[in-house]
Amino acid sequence: EVQLVESGGGLVQPGGSLRLSCAASGFTFDTYAMSWVRQAPGKGLEWVSAITSTGGSTYYADSVKGRFTISRDSSKSTLYLQMNSLRADDTAVYYCAKDRKAPGAWGQGTLVTVSS
Amino acid sequence: QSALTQPASVSESPGQSITISCTGTSSDVGGYNYVSWYQQHPGKVPKLIIHDVSNRPSGVSNRFSGSKSGNTASLTISGLQAEDEADYYCSSYTSSNTLVFGGGTKLTVL
Image (cartoon, rainbow over all chains, first blue to last red; front, side):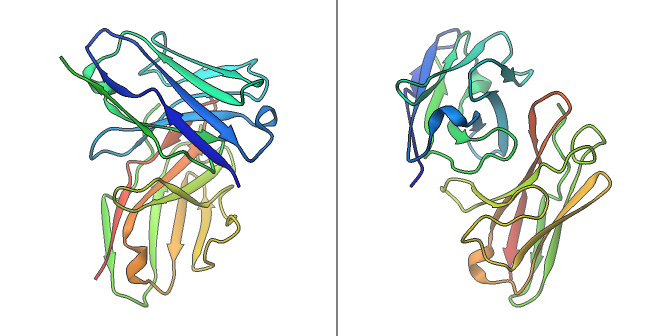
């Protein structure tokens, strides 16, 4: 069974940083691209970033480009999202998901709150 | 990276059918067969119900079906049940190697 478990969310001040992690199991991690998708409170889904299976290519939404960095560690079957220069409008539940063209399995999400 | 266009809300009676549209451009919906649909109940994680325009993952009811014509994709739910009441989102792969979601449609089963 595919399992994705996010961690690292929390309360951070504007301008601060956080690193999210997503531990994957139940599938061959290094053969799948991975994605991050977020959902602000009461709002819709927003694609954030994706990374290819090898980590050789990364992609970002315009809203986070230059501030967020996606990466992966195959030895740990873990996906990361380094978030810098956080703003209030980055407040959301962040989900990691398997695949990048049609994300199938999703984690339970981790809440990031940016507030002073 | 403009969001795909979905109706904000739709409603129908139990047992009836309903279709939710998802309109994009030739750079996303119209250009690729990577249109997906997700169902999200309140407080729950989104669930993939259609991928690659019209394919259902294992375990998804055959009451859900997808199609595409030009720049518009559609999700049809037949034999509506109370449990179908949820938010529905479409997504599409894009020419920029990104993914774009629709704004979501709230389905009410009357």
